[in-house]
Image (tube, rainbow, N blue to C red; front, side, top):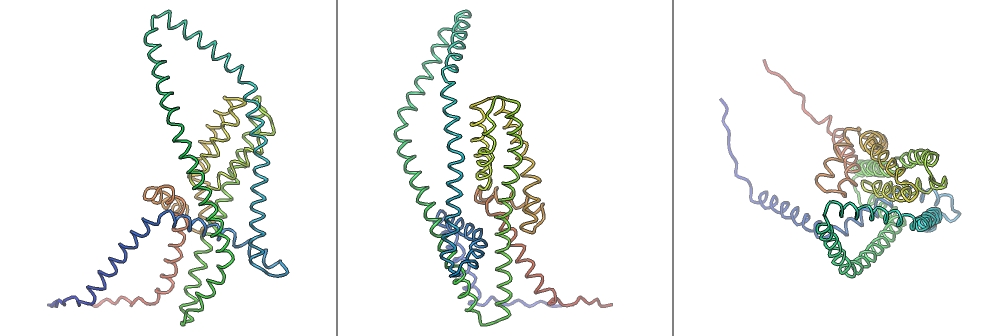
Length: 367
């Protein structure tokens, strides 16, 4: 027969518990209030990690070994790539718009013929009153929409300025992280007095760095696969429909750049591509949209989990579960960070198991 004794919880433990709880709740409040600022810092950190490898490689090859010069050179390369993108895509878009306005009179004439046919049909069945009411309804809605355009225009300008400011801030933070990051990390390791603990935490840190870097590289690879497959489909469409062949590469370029934006970037790219194709042939645009919808299902369920499972070193099932949980709890931001977070959790779990596998006492059975 065994007896149990109860002990009162010490007051110091009770106070410590509530301090932790209050601190945790206050941290959640701070995160909620500073959500946008934290998001910008996270984006800048992702970009810094993605550019760190090429910046380090460039710095080693520079005579001065200057990291500032290497970062500036990497920025110049990225900006040059952006200009190449603009000069490759914008002329094609302008050409397609010119083609659209050239064919606009024919489209208007066709709509006029259809309008006359509708008028004859309305007169034949005595639906003039309902038809006129519908037209008035449309006119009233158009008037109210036009009256609100001024406010929408002003708010749009404010949004554009806000996006530009945020983008500039992200670029500046990324630059400073790339330049000062190694110094910060070196100082951090210098704070450790225990060499064993320092090496353990260093291993965890670089394991997480490898996960995030692998995620970024995986996203580039996924976007490249999407662009190549779309390029093949668009080339086939240019042979089957009345479309210029020089449209294929710029659209694939647009899809590649848009695909670098996780979750919603592919949709934006598909809409732009469909509009450019639809200017030439609506049927071809519909076929492309059907293809892209099917491809997105394949990418989201097979291609992306497989690639990210290799680059982030977690299973494809874990990738799908992480995406599902992230999207459900935190929306688009959750979808963006869910896979690298899952990879970082794997690093922490592996470290815990590795350092505690010998601490478990053996189980003994008494007869």
